Image 1: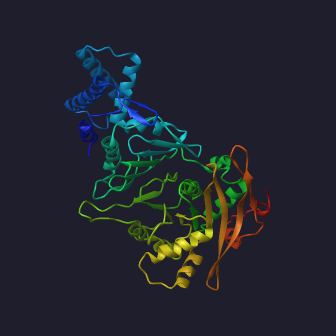
Image 2: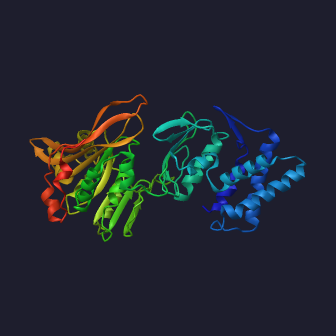
Length: 451
């Protein structure tokens, strides 16, 4: 759908919030609300008459059109419009046409990492790892639904009563999830996890306290040494960010295939093939799953396969890829500890519909995965890599693990900040010879016990 056609749909929005106070939306008096709606329609009609291309529609080219339409309409009504109110109306109209309505300023704020719309009149953000409510509002459910459609339509996805949930992404790669009534009782609910304009690098994570320089050098060697790495953690723990940082260590001359539900990984290498799953169409057909893409990627001569997240039967195909010459693969999964992650993988493999013995599954896991990087979001909102754990192999029917690094929490200070320190266990990984063979000579000082 072209941009101008999407703008045409906005003519159906007749009630746009001009002002919010506290927890409930407060609309301006009817004349101003009608002014904004009328000007909105006039701007769209002007763009259509001039046959403005969507590629040419920028803030610089649109602002004079909006200002002129507003000026003419106000003069026609014979109403006085204060300068500050005029500028605010112009900006709100710009946000509606080019951006995503009332939440546009939130998405442009670099200090905000997540935007959560719980219905039209309740919006929260995450800033510095903490949630806070903001004084912003939509006009009604219809307004929120329009913004959701504006996000998903360019991606060829849809949301309606027959398919009331959708995963999508913004043009900058930010992750979007939307769910609407009848499933969402509070009204259309939108969750946007923003991505930094400039992707984080390992120095950023060190500065944030997510890991130490010793841990970073160890992980760099593991990626360059083509170990299969699984990043594990809870929701919002920073798994995808860490996956992106680890992928930066992949050499430039290797072919990388990324597979995601909604493409959000921001890799810096030039030879990257990005694959994205596809939901079913309105007839319930045509769905392409992560598992389908993993299978297809094996025919694309990949040197590295990166799966944004395994959550179902694709875990079996990922393990088989790791076990059949695709060393150096990376993926993420949801779990609270490395041991829990192994149990989840077992469950996901069974979801593939294969009637495999548990021991056979565990043997596949132990031979495929070399390292688990466990990440957690702590009570104070900070993210920490709490475990870097080596998968050793099988002892009887149990997969054996050993921690190489750990984060040990010692308490919470008066400000609520989590206190603790990273510690090397002093144990050398069993794959050290493999790293040396790849000419990756890590100093044993990296593994000395430190606080």
